[in-house]
Image (cartoon, rainbow, N blue to C red; front, side):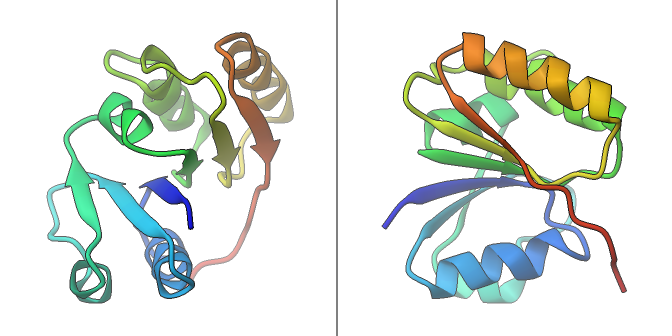
Length: 125
């Protein structure tokens, strides 16, 4: 099974990461102020300090953050996902963000050697 980096363990991200873990995947989550959700911690998920660290330790990187600026920061900010070696990896953005920004982000990620999947979700509590 794959090692999946998950950035965005909020209302929707945490349950999704838990389902991936239950399916047998290893989860590497971005460190945050809150503790790792109990079901993820019990299943062996680990924290990484930065988005770059998440990407370095994962084959697949999933982002699920609230808005376009946050996706851009996670991907291209200081110690962002794109600063890791992305050759042969896959980035899946599940954030609901501006379509033009998604196209720009996809080009940059592909140029870095990774695949890109735009998979926005909506909903919440």
